[in-house]
Image 1: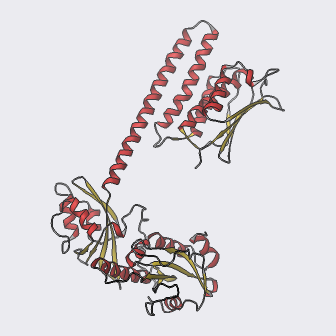
Image 2: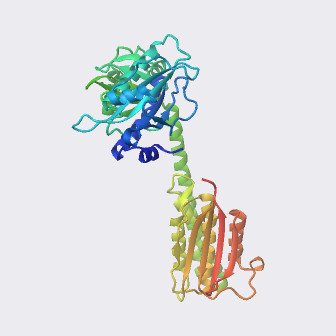
Image 3: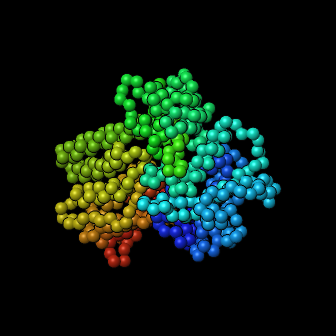
Length: 489
């Protein structure tokens, strides 16, 4: 399905500023749909104003939908939808007309012109919202429903006047309170004129024992949450409905999120809506995850320290050995332990069990170059990027890369040594090539007695479920290719 941006660019004359305004509107118009108990469809004028194209759609979560199919992308010729034409031409909200029974279900249609606020001007009309209400379950509305509908009417007027969405407001978060979480309606003085049952329950959990209706919300909330400390200024702004902002309050172990929507109609503030959500359990789980992440990072840090201690002890033992073969074996062990320590050091700084392997690869490459023989005057080089990899892949891959680089430097004596990386079709392909002496005559990977190559083969084929090939290069030297499957996503 084409996106809003695609449809606007392809079929309309709207500019970038217009598109930004529509994106802001669509990011928050679930509020209008829920308060209206109605479907919303956003119609933009086609090039040349020859008709209309539906560029966005929203269904209510508070009532039955009218449109079970997607309308986005539908084109309507001029004259086909009289209410849309009227709202656009007369720049006003249209509510006239009888319910439409063409679908077998009574549907009330309304249209709202969308105006973008322009500094120093009257604004620019961009589109029309079609609001369709399913009347099949119509009945005498409750106090909650009446409050919702009045609030929806005020918001619709703000859309037509270019006052909603709020210019310069921070983007609404996915976890922001919704209409069904809890709603308070305030008058111009910040007093509560209506409190939904969910909103009242949230304040009960904060410690409120009296009724909210008639109370000044800012003062009540401050009394509940800030009895022994300075009052949060954001709280007073949000709780009084003076600005479109969000805040959180905490009292007695309960955490409540507040979002204010000032109602500005006809140039003056007539009150506000305050959406309320109890986020106590959500914040508790977030804190538990933060504690868990910190614990895991500390474990990786301690493992890294222990591995570095082991490497230091092996290095000390190697210096005291007089047998060259024994010294060389211990030095290889130091390098293997060091490559694992690099991975754990990186994980100790990562918030999740994923690491940027490019950083690890560069450190492994640098370490291989530093410990190579003085007569091998070559600096290994990386071409391409590994990207972010899970730690289950990073550790064995770092060890395999260490072995291959060290093997090339020790036995090939190359002048050039490169690590080439490519990602394709959920596989990571790594090639380590050099221009050194090449493979010995009659080399066969299956029968090779090299401990380093046996380690690499076990890591690649056993732990990483990958493929390993070692072949001579036509230009001279050796080419080792690894192909490793990556987890999806």
